[in-house]
Length: 112
Length: 113
Image (cartoon, rainbow over all chains, first blue to last red):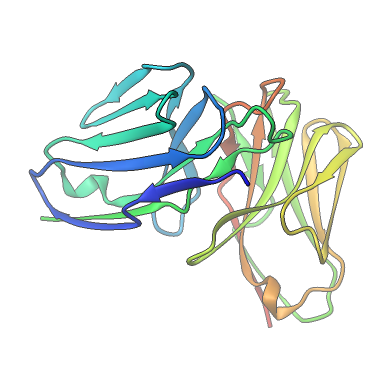
């Protein structure tokens, strides 16, 4: 069974701190996506990681992909309140028949 | 920029009504998807389409049907709405031959009473 596991599922942290969200997946893939969702809103694409060792950065967020370990990380540096949202990872599995396999999402709350 | 639009942001329907949710994308994408999102259950794929008039069942197709008569438009139909179909419905599209990055519409929050 194709699985994508995110952890933690919920994270409450103070502004200024660093933290990492992990996304493990169970199948062969070299394409992984990170999305952000604000409450009551739709999903917005954050990062597209297309090969082993890929690293992308945007502001205080940095995403990386290790296809050998089947692991992606989303690192938050010096968190600010505006980054409060739910973050999803999704894997483009080679045998998934056009589907992305989604993680359950990590709800991130950053307290001022 | 890719734009995916959905016909309604909020919709309230009665049990037993036939409900149409429309999704339109303007980037000539091959693939279109319908998801529902419920608290604690994440995103669940209802149906997807990889070409005009082609459709494939996702994880939870029961109680739903879809239509794709034109490349840019993908409709989700609830034949006889039930209260357990109250949810947020998200449409997405992607260009890639395989799957690729998906672009989402704003969502339709459907309430069935």
